[in-house]
Amino acid sequence: VVTVFVVIITGRYELAFVLPKSDDDAWSISLFSLIFTTALTLLSWVVILLFYDLMFALVADHGLNYWIFWLPFFCWLTAVYNIFVCWKNRFQKYKKISETKVIQVMISSIISILIGLTAFKSMALMVGAIAGQILAVVWLFISLEKNFHKKEMTAKSGHSLHYLMSISHFVTM
Image 1 (cartoon, rainbow, N blue to C red):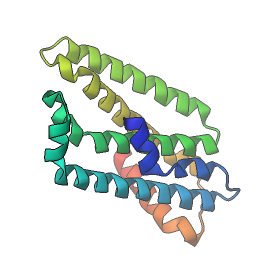
Image 2: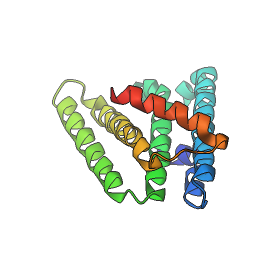
Image 3: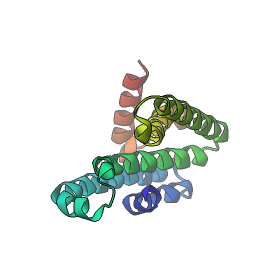
Image 4: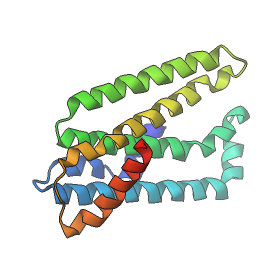
């Protein structure tokens, strides 16, 4: 389910910013992809809120209904992860991509097992997957600055780059 929604909310724009020769153009496409993804994720939450009763009636297992509110968030996380991975791919940072995937799977597995040992077994896989995805996105986000080689971007994307880098510095503090 998440995979299908991720394709829709990203528009697959994350694949496009590997192609441009200019880092500025690639940055603009990646920023657009993040904005597009966030906007469609928020729209999907509004749709869920408006049509929750109808969705509740269609779902056979009513114990899963509260997870529907997490679906847009998990789709957004997966989409942002894909965007960051494609950005790393542009700069041939394959080691960082591999490290991130290993960390994501390890955290997801450990949390799933630990929660599975408690009374909340039905939540173990979902919580583990979400936790692993959050950590992977944060791990990639923190390392974004290293891809810009400390070069000054043009005015076309410089303001957004400066804003993103200031957030990155705040996160790493």
